[in-house]
Length: 73
View (tube, rainbow, N blue to C red):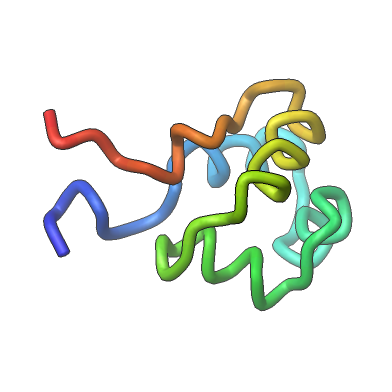
């Protein structure tokens, strides 16, 4: 795993902090389980296209599907 692929999805972390949400509250808001959110949050798994779309909608575009696919640049 390259350094671009490790760590937290920053846009998700920022959204959670700005909204003052716990991880459990964020999972509820996004319509995913806590375990799924943790796996997305720490880049262990990528959300399916349907879940990615729900995340974009729920965050008003502040977190996008592209955020789960780090660029190589």
